[in-house]
Every structure is written in structure tokens, then in C-alpha cells.
Image 1 (tube, rainbow, N blue to C red):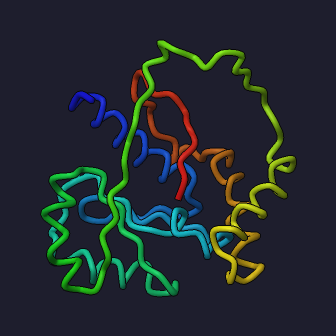
Image 2 (image 1 turned 180 degrees about the vertical axis):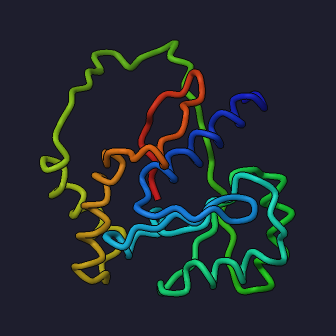
Image 3 (image 1 turned 90 degrees about the vertical axis):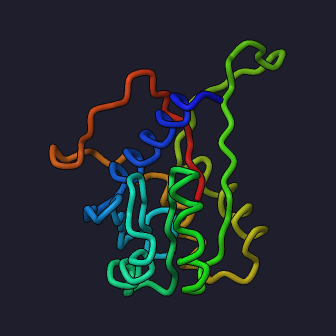
Length: 176
């Protein structure tokens, strides 16, 4: 994958996180994205780092902006920046997960593959079943929030939150 593709993907992911958030607070190196309706969703309540923060300040920044939540999530969209931040965050008690980004060039569609639009309400029961498999001990409120959060990406944009699209972006689901 080219460096340009990686930059486009990171820009899209940062933009998507900001657009689906109920509240966005710009922070050094990125943004805190929050949604009190989905307070159990790490994807909807996290720091999204798309710039160059001060690594030693990130844990305290997460405590300040996410302190009302029982979890902390910091997503660093650039591998080199993530590697630079990892020692300070590990020392502060954070775990590290690597996310694999894959692209599809469209050259070979599966035979007979058809896609059709379905309403989120039609998927809700299946989402809840899958979440129960992944998190069998989670409280009902958590499972319901995680299933219902899919609609946050369809929230209308206010002029303050609307960002210019990156040329060539393709909307795709983001899982958190």
C-alpha cells in the first residue's frame, strides 16, 4: 500500500470519527470525540490522534478528556507516531493493539456477489447476537448501546462539524 493511500485512509478515519461524534474537542495532535448516548462505545468516546502530540502528555490528556468514562482509548493513526507514543503510554498502563488496514482494488469480485441496502433496524437483532458472542458477560445497556451506535454515522452534520471530503474517499464501515 502506498504512503498516499495510508494518508488518505488516516484522513478519512479522523474525519469520520469527528463527523459521527456528538462532541468534538480539538486537542494537541488530534481530537477528543465523545458521544454520551453511546457512553459504552470506545469508538465513540476516544482520543483520535492524526497529528504529532507530545507522547508524555497523552495519558494525562486522556484522563482529562475521558475521565468521566470507565475506560480510555487512544487511536493513533500514523504508525511512526504510534511507535513514538507507545513507551510513554505503556508506562502509564496502556495496552497496545495494532490495527491492520487492507484495501481492495476491485479487480476480482466474488462470483454472484450482490449487495443490497438494509435498514439498521433489520440488522439490530443480528448485531446483538454477535455482541453477546464477543461479550457474553456485558450488561444489556452496553450491548444495546453498541448495537444502536451504528446510526451515529448517519447523524446530520452541523456546519461546524462538516469537513471537506478527501478526493477519492470511499465510505466504508469502521468497527470499534
